[in-house]
Length: 247
Image (cartoon, rainbow, N blue to C red; front, side):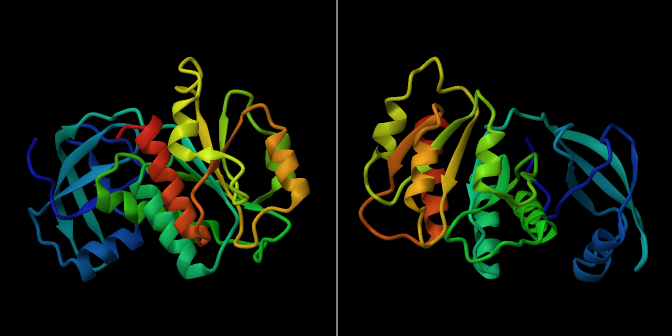
């Protein structure tokens, strides 16, 4: 496989040999005014369905960039099915968490409101933009979905029967994450998973009881240190990927 071009873009359109692509306003601005691409420049495109393709710039101006798809570079692979369910945190740290969770392979980012959550609103578009940019930079072939914010009760009431929960409980009642995940039944471990991270105030006792009562729940400990919510999320995803993912 040839080296990737320096520029990769996620697009919604289908990708196929010789297809013509006209970029939207934001991507046109990025290529024409920020990256200053020229006619004949080669970039990479992906859409989460058709793998990665190379494309040649066939027209460029400050208002319009057009491309022609030229070469299939990579087949679409099957991503891990791992949700990150998290309580919203302050803007800059939420940006960081969305970016790093994307780089680490999370398939969905799902904000959830708990008893001690400090924020009850998030800008889904901002989370999605951070995820998209991270996927473009780290050579992922898909961008994580971003769910609308829900209460903890709402999300648990509608929880899929086949999706396991890695519950990161700060009370240290669970085994270490690697030990707990290694103990999971081999017949169930290929199933979809989710990692549940609470706010910096933690979960209250009623929430803990509700989560632990779910038959899909595996309680884990992330160690004795008190971690910020964004740090805990990245640590948890890394541990899951090491035990059950593609690492």
